[in-house]
Amino acid sequence: MKEKYLYDIIKNPKTGLPELRQTLELEVVIGSDHCYDEDDCMTLMQLNFALDILDNEHLYIVGFDHYDRLCGVYCVSSGDFKSVQHYNRNIALFLLLVGARKFRMFHNHPDNALSGSSGDYQVMGFMISLGNVIGIEFIDSYVLCPDGWIKLAGGERVNEYMIER
Image 1 (cartoon, rainbow, N blue to C red):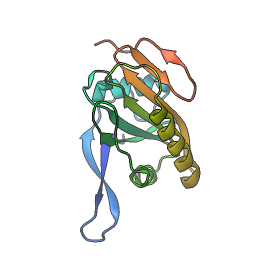
Image 2: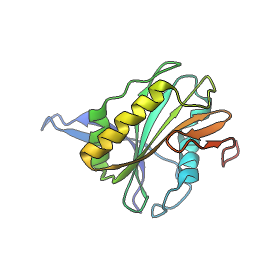
Image 3: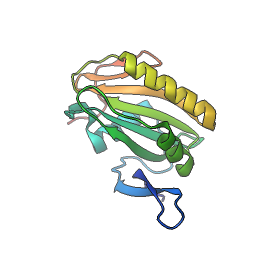
């Protein structure tokens, strides 16, 4: 069974090329051959990163194969109370190096705003463009906060998490 990891991108000291470094083995509650739907993704994010209760904004990219099986998770950035930095190059490298064919974006709103900001929609537009350029399907962007989560492209609001704390 292939293990699932949180990855970071580093520069190989010998070749100078980017490569993945495993930084954390994820707590996965379902098998490695499982196809991940939105609820499974929320469970994964909550069990491993507790995005709904963090004091500053975090941004994660989750890559999947053709069958929606998890390829890996990349912590793009940890920012301040209202924003995070992201670098499309590093996101593209992560997705290509883990062999992803699809991806989702997750971030939190520490101020409990269960809606997308103009910056959120702008970053989502960047992710759609990035996916088109590298040939990897962008599925959606999700905002998490203590009161629930929202799917930005689909506009769906969910007020409860699927897991108990």
